[in-house]
Length: 306
Image (tube, rainbow, N blue to C red; front, top):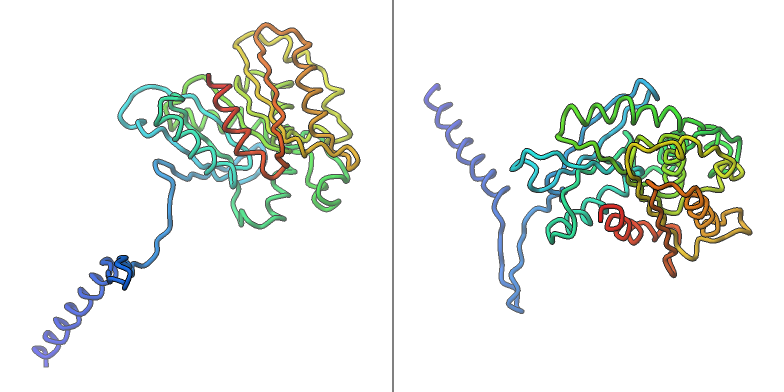
Protein backbone atom coordinates (compact mmCIF):
# COMPACT_ATOMS: atom_id res chain seq x y z
CA UNK A 1 0.00 0.00 0.00
CA UNK A 2 2.79 2.39 0.97
CA UNK A 3 4.73 1.51 -2.18
CA UNK A 4 1.67 2.26 -4.30
CA UNK A 5 1.24 5.67 -2.64
CA UNK A 6 4.86 6.50 -3.39
CA UNK A 7 4.41 5.61 -7.05
CA UNK A 8 1.22 7.70 -7.24
CA UNK A 9 2.92 10.70 -5.62
CA UNK A 10 5.82 10.36 -8.04
CA UNK A 11 3.49 10.38 -11.02
CA UNK A 12 1.64 13.45 -9.67
CA UNK A 13 4.95 15.26 -9.11
CA UNK A 14 6.05 14.63 -12.71
CA UNK A 15 2.68 15.77 -14.08
CA UNK A 16 2.75 18.92 -11.96
CA UNK A 17 6.30 19.70 -13.11
CA UNK A 18 5.19 19.39 -16.73
CA UNK A 19 2.26 21.71 -15.99
CA UNK A 20 4.54 24.38 -14.49
CA UNK A 21 6.86 24.16 -17.47
CA UNK A 22 3.90 24.68 -19.76
CA UNK A 23 2.87 27.76 -17.76
CA UNK A 24 6.26 29.40 -18.29
CA UNK A 25 7.06 28.32 -21.82
CA UNK A 26 5.70 29.87 -24.96
CA UNK A 27 4.25 27.80 -27.73
CA UNK A 28 5.15 29.10 -31.17
CA UNK A 29 3.59 28.19 -34.45
CA UNK A 30 4.26 29.28 -37.97
CA UNK A 31 1.32 30.88 -39.71
CA UNK A 32 0.80 30.61 -43.43
CA UNK A 33 2.28 34.08 -43.93
CA UNK A 34 5.52 33.15 -42.20
CA UNK A 35 4.68 35.12 -39.06
CA UNK A 36 5.53 33.42 -35.77
CA UNK A 37 2.54 33.32 -33.43
CA UNK A 38 3.32 33.10 -29.71
CA UNK A 39 0.70 31.47 -27.53
CA UNK A 40 2.06 33.03 -24.37
CA UNK A 41 -0.19 33.93 -21.47
CA UNK A 42 -0.40 37.76 -21.27
CA UNK A 43 1.24 39.50 -18.34
CA UNK A 44 0.89 43.03 -16.98
CA UNK A 45 3.34 45.83 -17.80
CA UNK A 46 5.04 47.79 -15.02
CA UNK A 47 7.11 50.94 -15.29
CA UNK A 48 10.83 50.29 -14.73
CA UNK A 49 12.56 51.40 -11.51
CA UNK A 50 9.33 52.50 -9.86
CA UNK A 51 7.77 51.51 -6.57
CA UNK A 52 4.57 52.04 -4.63
CA UNK A 53 4.43 53.01 -0.96
CA UNK A 54 1.68 54.06 1.42
CA UNK A 55 1.68 56.85 3.96
CA UNK A 56 -1.07 57.77 6.38
CA UNK A 57 -1.30 61.47 7.16
CA UNK A 58 -2.09 62.72 10.63
CA UNK A 59 -2.71 66.15 9.14
CA UNK A 60 -5.52 65.04 6.80
CA UNK A 61 -6.43 61.59 8.14
CA UNK A 62 -6.01 60.18 4.64
CA UNK A 63 -4.08 57.08 3.55
CA UNK A 64 -2.05 58.22 0.56
CA UNK A 65 -0.48 56.00 -2.07
CA UNK A 66 2.92 57.21 -3.24
CA UNK A 67 4.14 56.39 -6.73
CA UNK A 68 7.92 56.74 -6.76
CA UNK A 69 10.09 56.85 -9.87
CA UNK A 70 13.83 56.72 -9.34
CA UNK A 71 16.44 57.65 -11.94
CA UNK A 72 17.75 54.58 -13.77
CA UNK A 73 21.23 55.21 -12.37
CA UNK A 74 20.01 55.79 -8.77
CA UNK A 75 21.50 52.59 -7.29
CA UNK A 76 24.83 53.11 -9.08
CA UNK A 77 25.45 56.53 -7.52
CA UNK A 78 25.58 58.21 -4.13
CA UNK A 79 24.34 61.62 -5.28
CA UNK A 80 21.21 63.38 -4.10
CA UNK A 81 18.45 64.05 -6.62
CA UNK A 82 15.82 66.76 -6.98
CA UNK A 83 12.24 65.67 -6.31
CA UNK A 84 9.28 66.56 -8.49
CA UNK A 85 5.91 66.04 -6.79
CA UNK A 86 2.95 65.07 -8.96
CA UNK A 87 -0.66 65.78 -8.09
CA UNK A 88 -3.43 63.69 -9.71
CA UNK A 89 -0.83 60.94 -9.86
CA UNK A 90 -3.34 58.31 -10.94
CA UNK A 91 -3.11 59.77 -14.45
CA UNK A 92 -0.07 62.05 -14.36
CA UNK A 93 2.55 59.65 -13.01
CA UNK A 94 2.95 57.34 -16.00
CA UNK A 95 3.10 60.30 -18.39
CA UNK A 96 5.68 62.13 -16.30
CA UNK A 97 7.79 59.01 -15.73
CA UNK A 98 8.09 58.28 -19.44
CA UNK A 99 8.79 61.89 -20.43
CA UNK A 100 11.47 62.33 -17.76
CA UNK A 101 13.07 58.98 -18.58
CA UNK A 102 13.09 59.81 -22.30
CA UNK A 103 14.82 63.15 -21.66
CA UNK A 104 17.26 61.68 -19.12
CA UNK A 105 18.37 58.85 -21.39
CA UNK A 106 19.18 61.40 -24.09
CA UNK A 107 21.01 63.82 -21.76
CA UNK A 108 18.34 66.51 -22.10
CA UNK A 109 17.66 66.33 -18.38
CA UNK A 110 19.56 65.35 -15.26
CA UNK A 111 18.08 62.68 -13.04
CA UNK A 112 14.92 63.51 -11.09
CA UNK A 113 12.99 61.55 -8.48
CA UNK A 114 9.25 61.65 -9.15
CA UNK A 115 6.87 61.40 -6.19
CA UNK A 116 3.25 61.00 -7.25
CA UNK A 117 0.55 61.53 -4.62
CA UNK A 118 -2.30 59.13 -5.31
CA UNK A 119 -5.18 57.64 -3.36
CA UNK A 120 -6.36 54.26 -2.16
CA UNK A 121 -9.47 52.90 -3.77
CA UNK A 122 -10.61 52.76 -7.34
CA UNK A 123 -8.50 55.27 -9.23
CA UNK A 124 -10.90 55.03 -12.16
CA UNK A 125 -13.96 55.65 -9.99
CA UNK A 126 -14.83 59.24 -10.89
CA UNK A 127 -16.68 59.93 -7.65
CA UNK A 128 -13.71 58.85 -5.50
CA UNK A 129 -11.35 60.75 -7.80
CA UNK A 130 -13.37 63.96 -7.54
CA UNK A 131 -13.94 63.86 -3.79
CA UNK A 132 -10.24 63.35 -3.08
CA UNK A 133 -8.96 66.13 -5.31
CA UNK A 134 -11.66 68.62 -4.30
CA UNK A 135 -10.85 68.01 -0.64
CA UNK A 136 -7.06 68.25 -0.98
CA UNK A 137 -6.56 70.86 -3.69
CA UNK A 138 -8.87 73.62 -2.43
CA UNK A 139 -7.77 75.81 0.50
CA UNK A 140 -11.21 77.37 0.99
CA UNK A 141 -14.68 75.85 1.25
CA UNK A 142 -17.46 76.41 -1.28
CA UNK A 143 -21.01 75.10 -1.17
CA UNK A 144 -21.32 74.68 -4.91
CA UNK A 145 -19.61 75.17 -8.24
CA UNK A 146 -17.23 72.18 -8.34
CA UNK A 147 -18.67 69.14 -10.13
CA UNK A 148 -21.82 69.08 -7.95
CA UNK A 149 -23.08 70.35 -4.60
CA UNK A 150 -22.39 66.91 -3.10
CA UNK A 151 -18.76 66.97 -4.29
CA UNK A 152 -18.31 70.64 -3.35
CA UNK A 153 -19.18 69.73 0.25
CA UNK A 154 -15.75 68.05 0.48
CA UNK A 155 -13.86 71.23 -0.43
CA UNK A 156 -11.60 73.26 1.81
CA UNK A 157 -8.88 70.81 2.88
CA UNK A 158 -6.04 72.38 0.92
CA UNK A 159 -4.27 73.91 3.89
CA UNK A 160 -4.20 70.57 5.71
CA UNK A 161 -2.90 68.94 2.52
CA UNK A 162 -0.12 71.52 2.34
CA UNK A 163 0.81 70.74 5.95
CA UNK A 164 0.89 67.05 5.03
CA UNK A 165 3.39 67.79 2.25
CA UNK A 166 5.60 69.99 4.44
CA UNK A 167 5.41 68.16 7.75
CA UNK A 168 5.02 64.53 6.72
CA UNK A 169 5.67 63.75 3.07
CA UNK A 170 8.91 65.67 2.55
CA UNK A 171 10.48 64.28 5.78
CA UNK A 172 9.30 60.78 4.84
CA UNK A 173 10.99 60.96 1.44
CA UNK A 174 14.14 62.44 2.99
CA UNK A 175 14.28 59.46 5.34
CA UNK A 176 13.97 56.86 2.59
CA UNK A 177 15.66 58.35 -0.47
CA UNK A 178 18.65 60.53 -1.32
CA UNK A 179 16.83 63.77 -2.07
CA UNK A 180 18.35 67.19 -2.63
CA UNK A 181 16.97 70.39 -1.17
CA UNK A 182 15.40 71.15 -4.53
CA UNK A 183 11.72 70.44 -4.95
CA UNK A 184 9.16 70.97 -7.69
CA UNK A 185 5.43 70.43 -8.07
CA UNK A 186 3.18 69.62 -11.02
CA UNK A 187 -0.50 70.42 -10.83
CA UNK A 188 -3.29 70.37 -13.42
CA UNK A 189 -6.70 72.03 -13.13
CA UNK A 190 -7.58 72.12 -9.41
CA UNK A 191 -4.09 70.73 -8.85
CA UNK A 192 -2.78 73.78 -10.71
CA UNK A 193 -4.86 75.97 -8.44
CA UNK A 194 -3.29 74.31 -5.39
CA UNK A 195 0.20 74.76 -6.85
CA UNK A 196 -0.48 78.46 -7.47
CA UNK A 197 -1.81 78.87 -3.93
CA UNK A 198 1.32 77.17 -2.56
CA UNK A 199 3.59 79.42 -4.61
CA UNK A 200 1.95 82.52 -3.14
CA UNK A 201 1.44 81.42 0.46
CA UNK A 202 4.22 78.88 1.07
CA UNK A 203 7.04 79.72 -1.37
CA UNK A 204 9.63 77.80 0.66
CA UNK A 205 7.91 74.48 -0.10
CA UNK A 206 8.92 74.29 -3.78
CA UNK A 207 11.21 76.21 -6.08
CA UNK A 208 10.05 74.77 -9.42
CA UNK A 209 6.44 74.84 -10.58
CA UNK A 210 4.73 73.31 -13.59
CA UNK A 211 1.20 74.67 -13.42
CA UNK A 212 -1.17 73.41 -16.09
CA UNK A 213 -4.63 74.89 -16.72
CA UNK A 214 -5.04 76.17 -13.16
CA UNK A 215 -8.66 76.55 -12.01
CA UNK A 216 -8.14 80.14 -10.88
CA UNK A 217 -11.90 80.72 -11.19
CA UNK A 218 -12.37 78.69 -8.00
CA UNK A 219 -14.27 80.38 -5.16
CA UNK A 220 -15.17 83.41 -7.28
CA UNK A 221 -11.53 84.04 -8.25
CA UNK A 222 -10.53 84.27 -4.60
CA UNK A 223 -6.85 83.81 -5.41
CA UNK A 224 -6.72 87.18 -7.15
CA UNK A 225 -7.73 88.85 -3.88
CA UNK A 226 -4.80 87.29 -2.05
CA UNK A 227 -1.89 88.86 -0.23
CA UNK A 228 1.47 88.37 -1.96
CA UNK A 229 3.57 89.34 1.05
CA UNK A 230 4.78 85.79 1.77
CA UNK A 231 6.09 85.51 -1.77
CA UNK A 232 7.56 89.00 -2.06
CA UNK A 233 9.48 88.59 1.20
CA UNK A 234 10.89 85.19 0.25
CA UNK A 235 14.54 85.41 -0.82
CA UNK A 236 16.01 82.05 0.22
CA UNK A 237 16.14 80.55 -3.28
CA UNK A 238 15.26 81.23 -6.89
CA UNK A 239 11.81 80.12 -8.05
CA UNK A 240 10.95 79.15 -11.63
CA UNK A 241 7.32 78.90 -12.70
CA UNK A 242 5.86 77.57 -15.92
CA UNK A 243 2.17 78.10 -16.72
CA UNK A 244 0.54 76.26 -19.62
CA UNK A 245 -3.04 76.21 -20.89
CA UNK A 246 -4.88 75.09 -24.02
CA UNK A 247 -6.34 77.73 -26.34
CA UNK A 248 -9.74 76.00 -26.35
CA UNK A 249 -10.01 76.22 -22.56
CA UNK A 250 -11.08 79.85 -22.53
CA UNK A 251 -14.81 79.58 -21.79
CA UNK A 252 -15.86 82.74 -19.93
CA UNK A 253 -19.51 82.14 -20.78
CA UNK A 254 -19.41 79.01 -18.64
CA UNK A 255 -17.46 80.70 -15.86
CA UNK A 256 -14.11 79.22 -16.88
CA UNK A 257 -11.95 81.94 -18.48
CA UNK A 258 -8.94 79.66 -18.16
CA UNK A 259 -6.65 81.40 -20.65
CA UNK A 260 -7.52 84.91 -19.46
CA UNK A 261 -7.06 83.93 -15.81
CA UNK A 262 -3.72 82.22 -16.37
CA UNK A 263 -2.28 85.15 -18.32
CA UNK A 264 -3.57 87.55 -15.68
CA UNK A 265 -1.88 85.55 -12.91
CA UNK A 266 1.38 85.39 -14.83
CA UNK A 267 1.29 89.16 -15.33
CA UNK A 268 0.54 89.82 -11.67
CA UNK A 269 3.45 87.66 -10.60
CA UNK A 270 5.78 89.41 -13.03
CA UNK A 271 4.57 92.78 -11.79
CA UNK A 272 5.84 91.90 -8.31
CA UNK A 273 9.29 92.59 -9.80
CA UNK A 274 10.78 89.86 -7.61
CA UNK A 275 14.44 89.29 -8.44
CA UNK A 276 14.26 85.60 -7.50
CA UNK A 277 11.05 84.81 -9.38
CA UNK A 278 11.07 83.76 -13.04
CA UNK A 279 7.67 83.30 -14.69
CA UNK A 280 6.91 81.65 -18.04
CA UNK A 281 3.45 81.32 -19.58
CA UNK A 282 2.34 79.64 -22.78
CA UNK A 283 -0.98 79.08 -24.55
CA UNK A 284 -0.97 75.83 -26.55
CA UNK A 285 -2.96 76.06 -29.82
CA UNK A 286 -5.88 73.68 -30.34
CA UNK A 287 -5.55 71.95 -26.96
CA UNK A 288 -8.51 71.33 -24.66
CA UNK A 289 -8.60 70.81 -20.90
CA UNK A 290 -8.32 67.04 -21.18
CA UNK A 291 -5.52 67.00 -23.75
CA UNK A 292 -3.23 69.74 -22.47
CA UNK A 293 -1.33 67.90 -19.74
CA UNK A 294 1.17 65.82 -21.78
CA UNK A 295 2.17 68.77 -23.98
CA UNK A 296 2.40 71.28 -21.13
CA UNK A 297 4.32 68.93 -18.86
CA UNK A 298 6.82 68.11 -21.61
CA UNK A 299 7.45 71.80 -22.26
CA UNK A 300 7.38 72.75 -18.59
CA UNK A 301 9.88 70.19 -17.35
CA UNK A 302 12.38 71.39 -19.94
CA UNK A 303 11.94 75.01 -18.88
CA UNK A 304 11.98 74.71 -15.09
CA UNK A 305 14.92 72.27 -15.12
CA UNK A 306 16.89 74.09 -17.81
